[in-house]
Length: 131
Length: 131
Image (cartoon, rainbow over all chains, first blue to last red; front, side):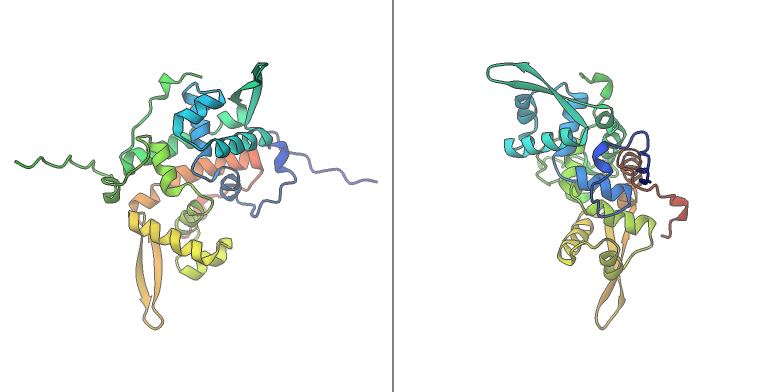
């Protein structure tokens, strides 16, 4: 009899089942995926600032386009973002966050709170969000 | 008459005054400092897991020692960590977080919560913390 595959927990992303994370630690896993200087800024722009096209995202932060491209693809591969085609010729996509991507909002808020308090950065009132 | 330097806000770290951050955004500033795969794991080990010597920190996560060295120095330079010598020959230090470093706990908790929910990582009960 074939052994049943362990049941995935309700929200766990499909890619997480077989990915060779280097640790069981949730912080380590999250950093393996999102621990860099850019990814959370893309999430921020998708979530709060109404930036959804490649050009809008590239212009917003000055992220090199090859990096933006790679980060968006990774967000899509993991199920944190998705895209829909809005133009044919040339083909253009709009990017948006899935529920799993939007669930990073609490992390963004804590990162912002710390940076506001200790690095003198601005505090964004997310009631102004344009999604 | 010399113009008075704008008064630093109460908690802002000294290094933040003149640092050429690429953005006013608190998230962007925090990521410029801490946005990588290792730094928050070092903070986690100092904060929750009672790891304070270089060897303890290096063994905990398998971080390459040259990277650990650089990350610890950056944490100290920015005032998120400090060190005290506990041995003379050879010279050895114990590292610990300052208040600004400990204030990253809320960020750690959110990162952990997300990784637990979406990547199937463990959830650490910080009542077990050994500081």
